[in-house]
Image 1 (cartoon, rainbow, N blue to C red):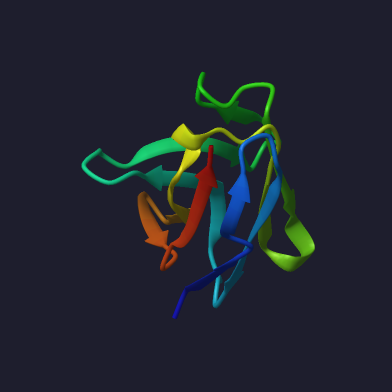
Image 2 (cartoon, rainbow, N blue to C red; image 1 turned 30 degrees about the vertical axis):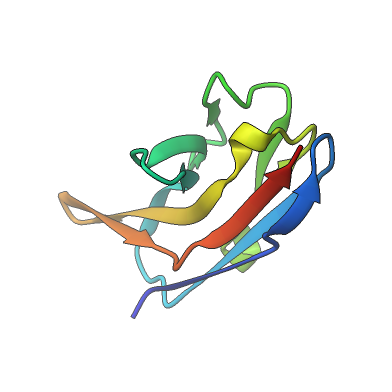
Length: 119
């Protein structure tokens, strides 16, 4: 049973920093990517940052230069360092793991952690 446990969300003032962590357990297949998504009230869930198995990273334009995704493969843990936070970064942040099972890919999601940035 794949489980993703997120931590590190909270309330911070604009310009501040937070570090999110997501620890994955129960993984017995290859990981294609570990990613962070977010969903603000009334908006669709969007990709924030992704870290692929070949060590490439991808960022949404809105967070480039402010957020950094990193991964500890030995611990199956992915982090999101968020600096220079803005009120528009307020959202529930979700961890995602993309697994390769034979010819198929499966997505798993964490429960989400709230990030609130006050102005």
